[in-house]
Image 1 (cartoon, rainbow, N blue to C red):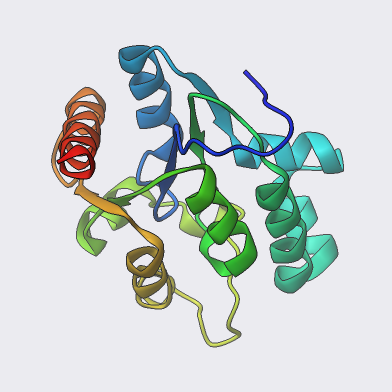
Image 2: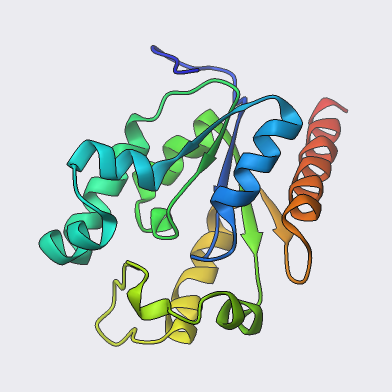
Length: 183
C-alpha cells in the first residue's frame, strides 16, 4: 500500500544484496509470511523509464543508471512493504539513507562460490559495473560487500538454504531486532 507524506514509522523491510542472492524471490515469500505488500525496485525503474535495466545501463552508462536508481529509491513511500532493491542500490548514498528512514535494511549475504553457481550467465544479467576495472563477479563482489555491510541493519546469511528457509531466517532476525529495540 503506497503512502504519501512524511513517514515516521520504519515499518518496511528493505532487502539488499548481490545480484542472484534472491532478494525478489525471498521478498515475495517473506511478504506472504508477514502479510506485507511487496515491491521490486528494478521493476519500478523499468516502468518509470519504459526500458529494460540492461537498455538503461547501455543508454545512460553506469553513472546515469545509478542516478536514476537513486532518484527512484529516494522517492519510495510505502507502508508495511517488503522492498527488494537492485544490487546496485548501495551506490546511491541518498537512496540508502532514505530506505533506512522508512524501513529496516536487511543484507542477504551470500558467499562468492555459491554466487558463481547461481549466476553462470553473469555477463548477460544487466549488472551495473561502476569501476572500469571491475570485470568479473569476484571484482563486483569485492567492490559491493563493504557497501552492503555499511548500510545493513541486519545481516542474514543465505548460503545453502532454500528460499523459504531464507525468508524464515530474515523474519526471525527482524523479530529478534524488534525485541532488542523494545527492551
